[in-house]
Image (cartoon, rainbow over all chains, first blue to last red; front, side, top):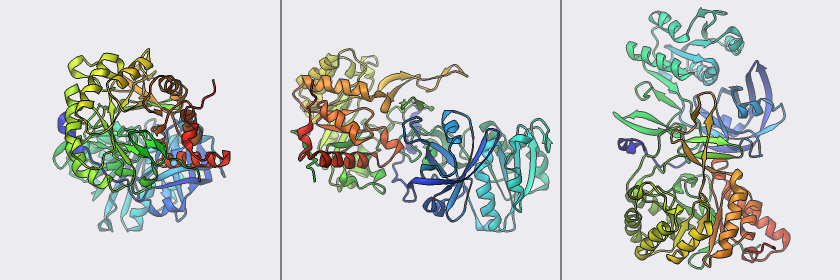
Length: 278
Length: 303
């Protein structure tokens, strides 16, 4: 049993009107690097609604293997298409990796609450820190903030150069990029959080965003706390449904000064540094 | 058009498809996406008397064609349900069945006592798979005497029909079903989830914080079907079948095996429109086969 003080977190909400079930989202493009994959899905309804930091639930096969949909953050969008970027980590993503152009997928989205996109960031510096596959939602966010006129600086960290597979894609945009690799094959040698700590004094950001491994985000949250920089993080969880019905993805979160249990899918996946209990 | 309505004796449903407890929230959540009036009924998320926060995460693990959950029945309790949910829910023309939970016979009674005066509820579904704290954690559903005790005490206090939801984790499901019938239950629903374990080989830890969870989904359908057939063949009260139903064909299998209605559960998590799909496929099948009334198909298994 969870502590009784968590009860205020039990919200009953109508599922967002924005959620669309698109059972025929066509794969229009596919790229892959080692165990990483990028799929472009034609889904105009979802593309129109999608905001940075939101996610979709993908039914990998109409047969019940795997049974549950898998959550993927929206990596980018245009008028008609959304992209997802993922790493082959288990049986579900292994099957998804086998899908080809012209196959279609059954998807639900956009889901969740995204990152803060504030027109007031025009002319201000914003920092994004992505680790490994956690870079996925930051591309969409960076594009939106750059369009608003923010100075976007991106810390992209991974184990090795070969894991920085979206490097070229990011470089085709007007973002300032900082690379780090644990083996030193590109950029700063070590953890992206250490690189951020080193560079931060000269950058004076208005806001920070992050997505990646939990340990990495925790360190970034500590840095943001120390330097008193507002920051948001996208959390990952096993999800049964993704739209608030199964109550499986709960997490301890601070809300209005109280600790409570919230569903990551519905109240997140993006939370502020003050809210997350690591 | 085939007549899909079914008469449980104590409750008439416009069609035999009911959303199962724990997979459809309190009903209202899905209202922006589904026309709730098309459903035969909705069973709410399990309600204890007081609000509860449920189990520690991780609460869910996937299995082959199934899922194992140990959500732990978090919920808003009877007061918030009556104030925030029921007044809106009763506006939809569908049977609202409240899933009633308790840590003791007394708690089941207090839930029913509280809800008896409220408008808009068609029946109670007793979730007798909740651990009974006073009886050392034993679920009433695992024992014929405990089942009799809780069902008869609730029946005495209830102003509404009672459907007793059985656990499949027993040696003799018919014995438990007969106990519920003898105690005055108006109907039986089965099966709840199968007790299961998922192991993470890397950490050598259970995948669920709760150690065990309940297996549901297509994986359990043949087991559920067998138990529904066994129970429907023995009891006189109507049986509602559930366990892995996600298509019209699945639903038909349960109806043929003896269920008068069915509940769709886990499928709702994968496809929020699953209940509507099952109804549509039932309609299509009956039309194709020239079946004028779906009730005619109930219990027609040729053995």
